Amino acid sequence: MLSDKSEKMATALLAQKQSFNQAISAVQGTIGGSARKTDQNMVAALQAAEKKLDEAAQALKHAASEGKKFAGTL
Image (cartoon, rainbow, N blue to C red):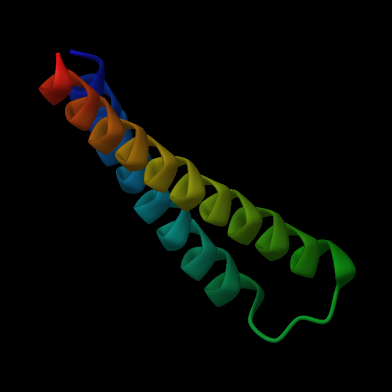
């Protein structure tokens, strides 16, 4: 069922988000208080990707919910 696949994909994306969160912490720990633009850009890119993963997971969860509602009307 499509809603089940959507839920599984959302779970996988949230796991990937956790991986990005760990990478962000590692990069921040490595660069410390560096003011280098490239260091800041790396952290910003990881944070943006983490946010998009969260948004995609939420959209998939919503699609799964709507799919279940639709299936219930058939």
